Image (cartoon, rainbow, N blue to C red; front, side, top):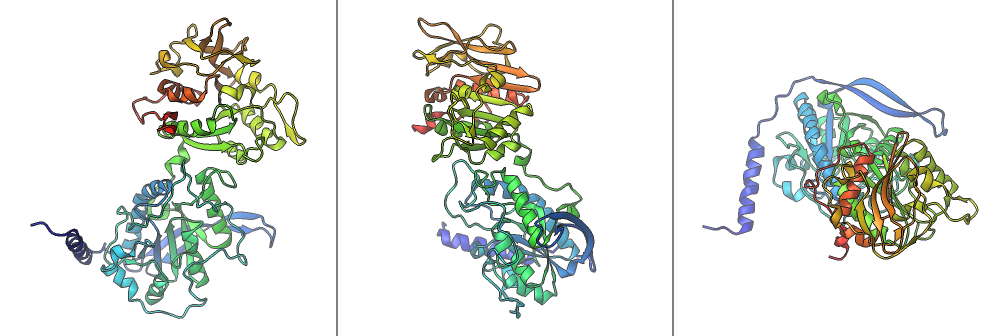
Length: 531
């Protein structure tokens, strides 16, 4: 017999409630103490704006302590946020399990997902807690407190999604299954959490979950509210995240944005601990924090790389690299907001044409190059910062960039589509692994670049009728720097899979890493623009 879906769902929910109700709790040890090492930031002098990092060892009674798990949904509206939740959840479950055994109350708070738990004993446990008189009126959301704290150190006004392209929509799901909910735990998304704590004589609160700049600070069961009510509060700093887009101020990688907000919390709200105090494992680190950071600097109109390169960057991200895209300001093409991201770059990928940068921005490029870090350039990158001596006051150019960084000598271009061949002795170069040179065509005009620097290795040669052959791709190694340049980069070039593969290989070669297998992760081409 087949039952309607609503009946089947009801049967499954009843079954789950029965399992929870009969689930044996972990054995709890009475009178346990939590040995904690917390970190906070202390202002050196009142109103100085200067802070020192201070650590302190102390103990809390487990039975007077609660852990709040904030908004660890199984699916977030932002794919990047969902990915980081998945990374955190197993470690968070270890912490919750260890704390539960010591007698800590676990309060699960998946805001917006309460319907999933409405008939469970854990939900009823929180709902039955009697209301108590609060020191300060309990709030449904605790906003930025300008009397107590400075503005947040990140700009999250765009919603904070760090994905390319940005995700959209609202998804409110139950808590991720990797964090177990057991008998004796509580489930709520409101000030019931505080009522339950007061019913149990709990004065100590440990918060973990997402997101520091939003829910972890603002929810009615979380940091600001708990501090207002006189609770002792700690944040687990390696088990939290931010909603921060690295293309917004202060233009730092996502994980650095999280660190900045944690620092803000340590200054103005509460101390922080790591999961190590419960697990004896090193603090959790997001996988993206360990990924090489590729900064794309895009500022040209002729070849539409503002469209093609963000798609190409997916080929690098699918192979374990982390990418930040920096576009020229649409109102001022000579300015590149967010260029400070270059300070954490492991490789600069350049597609810029004749832009004179504000002096402080060009200084960032010069500093990056001076460190011997790699540069990969396409097409107009050879004359990226050459404005023929014409630039506004306060701006600067770098006419010798081509010669100094790429070992190049750009001095014009001509001709139709370019026929390509391997340069002599280049066939065994790493950059050509799993690349069919026969399928690559130069769809743009042939750049005049001869003669190249002596320490350049030519990789591909371009030929057009009635003109001298010219190198179209080469490497330039000067000291520790491993740089790659190609005059290819026309929009139609990005339609060719082997051209995209060539650029992927060039990036990995410049990073001094083995080139990845083309069969892993697939290749994305600019053909997606016309699909």
